[in-house]
Length: 74
Image 1 (tube, rainbow, N blue to C red):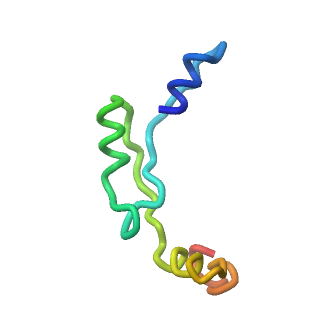
Image 2 (cartoon, rainbow, N blue to C red):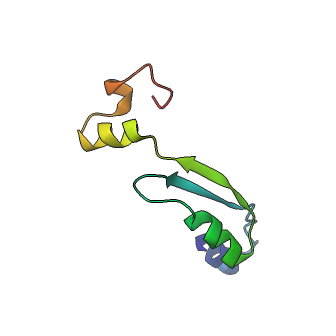
C-alpha cells in the first residue's frame, strides 16, 4: 500500500512484484500477507517466519547472534 501511494506521487511508478509476509508465526499469526495480496490483487510471494529463538533472545535483551552464534538465524 505504501508503494502504491508513493508510485502515484512519483514521476515514475514503482513496480510492485508482490507481498512477502514477514515475521509470521507464533507472535503475529499468519495469513495477513495473503489476505492483503488478495485484496490488492498483488501476487503473494511467501512468508518469513519469526524464529522463536530470535524473539526470546530479543526479549532477553541479547541478540541471537550473541546468545546462539551457531544458529541458522545468527
